[in-house]
Length: 375
Ligand SMILES: Cc1ncc(COP(=O)(O)O)c(C=O)c1O
Image (tube, rainbow, N blue to C red; front, side, top):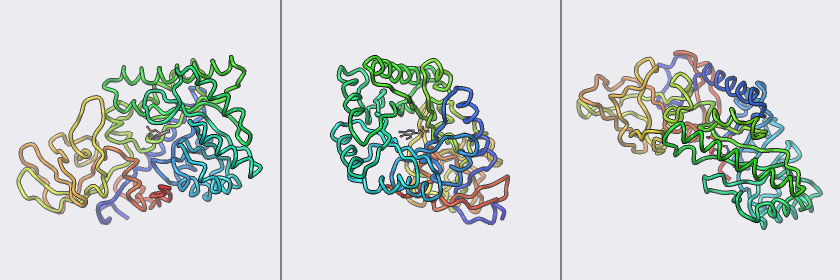
């Protein structure tokens, strides 16, 4: 099928770019001497996960148990949940452990005890990593706290749990204002994790794994992995990239694999057109990057090789994107454009399937099998 035959809006994934991104980041991880365990939240597709594994990834990460269930049932054998799953879900985790090697994170002693009791009751041992707050201030223990090692010791002594290591996510890298700042975020993360590992080791608690992961910091982290003994990289967004990664220097426009194909459905003024992709397709995520850029995504030029700087997606309704042109625009109702979304992970969660494309041809329809598995 040709792209012109597709109804719009439609989420397109350029297969070559996707495979190139998978290969390039695997090569980066291999060169850094670290295992790659991609976060599957971006593609939510066991098919793409299989391509990542075939290329050398050791397993995947999922945020939610519902996602993990989809991947485990599709035959993915090693799944890490770097999300503070509550022990009220222990029954589902026990069931999953029949199919796959499962690991979770903990950052709270009461929660860790809950997991310990559940696993001891089931006669199983669950791999756990301790979540460390490296500056994002979302979850995680404070690595500089005087009792940080006491916490690690307490977790390591709980029956039914097997302490594997320390894990962090430098989500604050998305707020960096320059490449230097991003590099500093990556360095601080590596220092904090390795410093805590060293303190734990001196206290007689062996720490095998140091797991870090985020796409903006990836290139810097990879270059310091050996120096700090980082063992695992968990980027997710790199399979598709998006406008934010472009604006954070993590990708070029030629790397961006996911776009939204949209049709101009109205032209109320010479400098304003309406696309048929609203917040139900692009999501309402704002742009991020070193320099703040307005708009809910970037309209690409005809051949998709550049951003049309003349056009700004200034407003979204559920099914409408209002595009403002600087001066007049030649776009007319019926014309089709491609939009580079601000955040590709949330876009793939909004559709049942993405279209894998090569040039102007659809190669395959790829179900987003784990979309909407929010529990
Ligand atoms: C805990 C954790 N690890 C890894 C990732 C992957 O980061 P990114 O989306 O920047 O690739 C995320 C993303 O939200 C995350 O929350």
